[in-house]
Image (tube, rainbow, N blue to C red; front, side):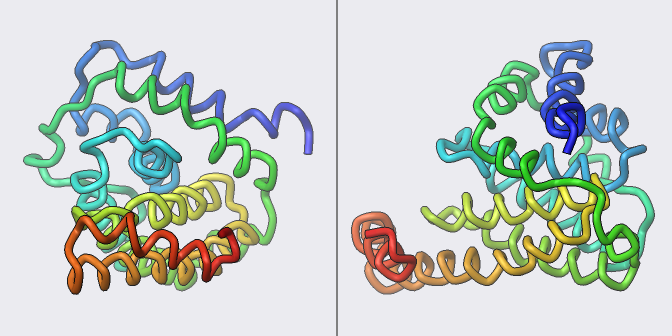
Amino acid sequence: MSDEAHTRLSAELNAFVENLADETVTIGAVLDAIADRGFGLILLVLALPAALPLPAPGYATPFGIMMGMLAIQMIRGRPTPWLPERVRARTVTKSKLAWTVRNAGVPLRFVEWIIRPRLSGLARNRGFLALVGVIVLLMSISMSMPIPLTNTAPSFVIFVLAAGILEEDGLVLLGGLVLAPVAAGIAAVAVYYAWTLGLDAVESQSWPFIKGLLGLS
């Protein structure tokens, strides 16, 4: 892969933030600025804050709800993203978006290292994209829950899928579908511990259990 292709995603996100005119912008203005890139870039921007190892607080639930709306549109075959006016009127600060892009080194480097146009016919297939939409919907439901450990892994799956859509990389899309059950499993364990033992037990007890299952302990 050329250096230009390798850095394209980072450059595009940085340029997007730098070109925002005001310090506080509406979700509608963000959507209008990138809607011509389809679902890929808007999902990428929405997933990135919660996909970071140290996610920006307060993003997961509202952004998860918005991504769920977009996922339903993908399932229905809508060609361009749309959000209702009440959602479009919500605001986000340019400084928060800039902080997110600056601190996005790990997920961005991972995606940029592997992404390139491959299996593009699969990436453009409406039936396959509908399946991707189903996975995005399930992951967005998980990341919308106010429970520890249900946000970051599903957000990262959406981030990978969004990058695959954006660059028409069918192989990365397939990889995202493979990662989805892992993220779902982590979320399911967290929900189980929260339901049976309370929220305080999620990180103190479920995380060691999850690390043991993944061979990270």
